[in-house]
Image (tube, rainbow, N blue to C red; front, side, top):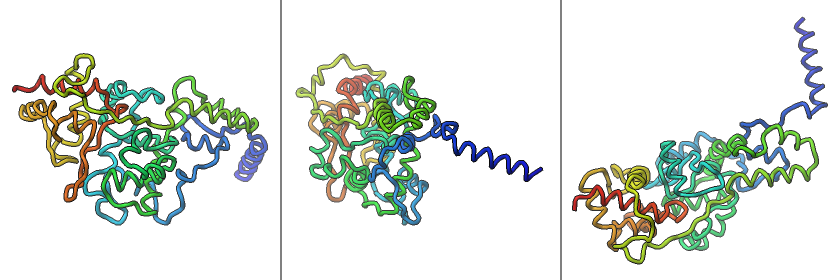
Length: 336
């Protein structure tokens, strides 16, 4: 009886092997990167994980989350990837990279409100260090803009002020980033699903190329970056709607305290005391490194002996209105 069942199973498999239209090729939970490969898209050399002995997604996860280098010790003495980047989805609508909607999403999903774009879906984007980042990093951006490996290396050495990644570490980080890539199910309602894609897979190459182009319209292929100046009159602030203290509280808790509470990533400590509220409110209109207008729009620079610094927020990561909301919250808590 056992041999009869085995023979029947073999016949069934052979039958389906001759009928690929009966076998699903992708499912709703399939990584979008693999969907594109199934549709015949050429594999990007900057995203494809190269075979390096000892490399693994687990090592990459450890480096990204804990900052631990493959050989032991910290990749950077100052920052981890998660200092500036989330690892989860942070935009409700994947084509609408709006800081107001992102802050609401961060509050709903208990996420930090950070200056760097989320690493979730990084392998699906096609451009990095976009917009005005060339003003900050100059020619370093040229090799990083269309190459994820170069973008990661730029982040490791310049942004994190750490050591360059070894081949093992780089391939491990890429392997980990693939685990947090977009899945077909992450695309919004109305996007092609597995059933429709599987039908296209049985059709000609023109249909496959068209499907790839269609899928790419449902998420952002790059994160724009616009550098913004502080207000001309720092006493008056930005000419926006009146600041909303409730919104400012969310920003303070999810942006400022993410780095500064208990000196997590900064020598400058912030908390939720009267002293903190008074200090930050007093410095808002000033031209000092403690003015939120100053550091949110210019950041600070690493200097010899003190390589930790504050990255700035672009317009797409924190709006002028949100900075005024933050000021409204702090000044409302201050007792000057």
